[in-house]
Length: 231
Image (cartoon, rainbow, N blue to C red; front, side, top):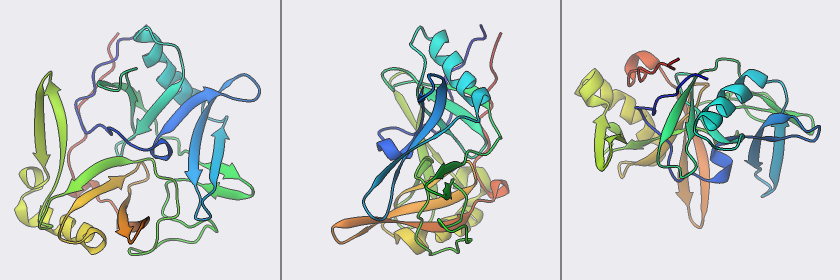
């Protein structure tokens, strides 16, 4: 069995149940990819997809290599890298790349992380994000001039990684301004998914709504973490 490295990049920590994918046992007894979706009508839709055995295998190989039972949560980042948390969620492991798009059919609707509404119409920046919530969290820095994330390069150490240190201050400012349109200058969390869709939660009174920010240009972004599965 191959060995799987600890993922040296941006890891989603402490996210809601509807902000992750999971592998679980399906109705036919075989493992399936599952997703919880919260509709605008305050319903929870429990969706599954049986058409991704390769993805299921990636996740479960990591779990078994760690001496854990199969199935459980996982994430796919904007570089199509599959990230699997340990049982405690303290370490995340790189399972490999997976580029086949995940789409879920539910009551005649197709749901995915693509920038479309439930009727299949394309979204424009500023529209409400009505799609699923799995994504990798990033932070718009206070003042709206930069974007960052935090990761642990080694035990008991946290490192802040700023976009301005990668692409320069002016270019990072331009990217950050797209997020400011939704989040405001106070900053805060937003998400990027494997379809390169950017969306953000916005507090509106007592409620939280999600808004579509736009499509990510990877040439003006953080580099993909260099990861390789060993033998």
